[in-house]
Image (tube, rainbow, N blue to C red):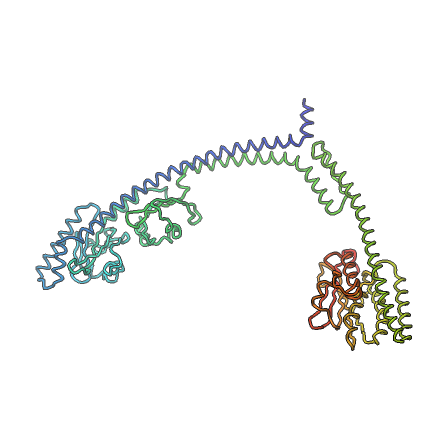
Length: 610
């Protein structure tokens, strides 16, 4: 039984994978237990969130009640008939000092009586830049004169009719006679009109007790550092526990971009402030103000987060143990696969001798042995393909040479025939002699490749014949460094192109011309090669014929540039040097000559001599 299990584990890859899967399942169970605690913290977070929103609602309702009392009291004063009577009498003028004193006492009594009807209101003022100002409680009229109401934006907005009513941020009462910064108030401002004339007479200020406002805010606690504050519709902080935050903007709280987009009655969201994940809740008040609460999320989950950290610590230890165990098992499985992959990389480098040394009895070992057999078969097939391709290339080159040799011989004999026809016997004799020497030199060479030196010698013998025909109007200029003379190139590579330049470029011109052959190395050292440039100053090639020159579709006679010669060069270059090599033809418009460029990108074994 033990022997069976041992053989099963040694021969079956699936058994090894099942064991690894069991280990992963064990680890997954441990992760699920950790996720259970994470979901628990989420439940607690939702409960805390619900409680926070309920507290925010209660505070919002309480603050809305206070704001409603302040605005209702301002409306009551605005319509009070007794106050309107005093305003209208003073507007007429001609009052004695006693009458003004009586009016002051009467209005102050009215304001005190209205103030005492609500425990939320601390004081009420009727402020006027011109004339007497009145107030309840410890109102100090002399402070109004020092305050300069017309320098205050809120006073100008109210009297100018730009706003019908507004609330000022939480502040210390500037008009109280009990000393400086002694009473915290939240002020409601409404214009005071003379209803008889409809003209503004001053401003009504209803001061709500600021301590009651702060108590309503402080009753809501969010963790250790979280707090609530109130912002107006413009994003300015109007109520906050810290005096330094009064009249701040939302940008200072980090909510400048987020809060203005919230139009719902109630909302909650999370955001990042100074790299700390924060929870925020908002609630609209009766006016356009919004109460905002913000607290770090970490403080809300509190102890649950610490428990979760401990759970993750134990899970990390278990993960480390599982990782070590999984590594040991995976190494036994992956080591043979890595050996097989290494063999594949050697095969990619054409090293068919690097066989796999895997000797196990499982599926990987069987795969390795089959792979070794396949490598041997591939090597044999590659050798066979290389042999066939070599013979095919040699046959193609022979076919091309068999095309170009009769073509070259035909053109040369046609030249000699032309000389005989016009009685130039000595020129014909010299041409036949040069042809004999040219053919003799060509037959002395064996193989497909010539050195550049030999190719130029054949080209020079060919030019002897052409000079006889054209009365020495044709010139050849060769530019090649001595260091390149012994580099090998395919035979008869330059002669067909020079022949094209003479027949179709220079011959039509009465004064002949020059064919310039330039041979140089490519500038790119990563792709060494040669550039063979054959340039003439002849008649050029019509633009409509340039695209078809290398395709054999021009419809011209099969000679020269429009025959098989240029095609032979292009096909020969691509056969030996690849598709990135080849022939390029450029002929400027207007008969500016023709430039034929032959690019030979050398293979490694060809570039040794360069």
